[in-house]
Image (spheres, one colour):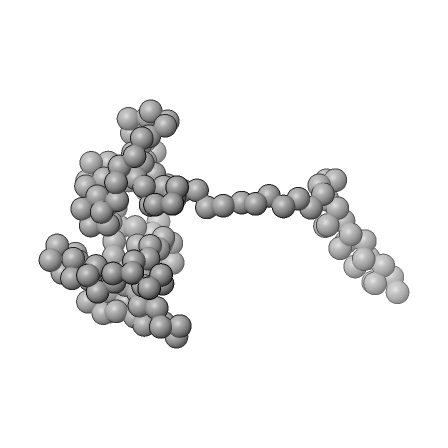
Length: 151
């Protein structure tokens, strides 16, 4: 009985901690920011390979550039922070295209290496749900998944 009481008090404490009431915050994805070593090379990569458009950087910081991901979503490229970033494929962002085959042809034309999740070169993964996906890296080594999820 004592253990049940402690469990109930603990559970109540978690749900009522610091007096916060449950509120629907209606959070929506806004942007992803990447620390880059060469701002111009990164802007060029995202503009040429993913065809992202540069948009107004409202911070007006010259060491930061903003790119549109569409639907009011943004990619912020930041060269103002010094320090090494540890990268691995699990740290990535993904974009979808209904023109997946055309995108693969574009990668081949631009000689951009791509791989599947395990890392097999020039290989496309088809997930159990039928979505095709590949992974590429930007000039700083960040992983980007391109998939056909919105076909």
